[in-house]
Length: 417
Image 1 (tube, rainbow, N blue to C red):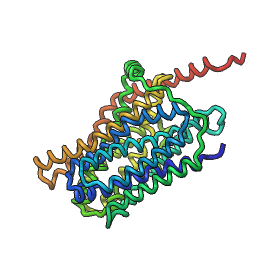
Image 2 (image 1 turned 90 degrees about the vertical axis):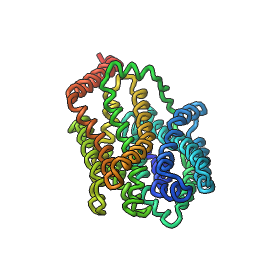
Image 3 (image 1 turned 180 degrees about the vertical axis):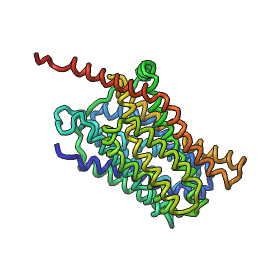
Image 4 (image 1 turned 90 degrees about the horizontal axis):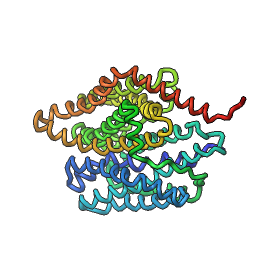
């Protein structure tokens, strides 16, 4: 089978409309609709709630009807309509409800595009990709790159903040049409249904499984800070326009995306856990520093270094969860791992604006944001410090898991003698 360029391109494009809106959130929510920082946080968080609630529905419907492409196309058109509808309303409550349903529609698109990639990798007749993880790695990288690429496109809203919504709607229509005309469904691979009871079995048998879950939650939690409070800081305190603000936030996402695959390769030599710890420590330190300076070039440097740290630990943290999972429960573990990350992103903006409001009351505006930034960065550092004492025990658990998998593989292999 040739490389699925169409699928990977659509995955890339699917993330562009989402992050294109981030730089103009302040213009839309605060200036146009007269909202507050809390409503900015809700705008960032509420689509994640829609995604969290409707993500499983997408998989169930797709498996039931044994189809990906038509559902992808259908929800592209629905999402495009919701994007456009956001430009028409002037009531903030209606605006946020539409945003909730937009997030629910968008998870159908992203979730089923990723499921299409998983179908290819889980098809035994496809020897090029079956069971190798290469396609999912490349697809995940382009998903992140799409998000990073969308950030600077916020410059389109420099004069009219509604333009990114119009462009995002047009991109979604294009994805829908391309899905109908170019995308081909392979053999549908049904994922094992998530069962919370199975996750409890895995956690009880290996309590250290909570560590990659905590890393993913805190990582996404801090991204919520970037998308809300840090975004407003760039616009209001530093006076950046939508384009520069989007570019600076993209400085974190671009290195994270580009380093994901090299980090996975590097982990073969260094091990997974050292990269998770080193990357998280690096990320946390420079996340803290990013809130302390008004200097253009120094801030740029801090954010690039922050992105490098994120890139080093992003994929290894997923690999850590997978490697520590009990054989036979990997799908359940990774489904929960993804869900925990979504919750982190959902709660991050809300916690960020509430803590910022408290710090401004206690410390004043001059010191509140540096303390806020260091608080979020310290969460990463603290988690690293709490993990270090268990370093060797975690490595031993991973080694035991590997031995279990090898024993199962040998037991299932045909007897050649």
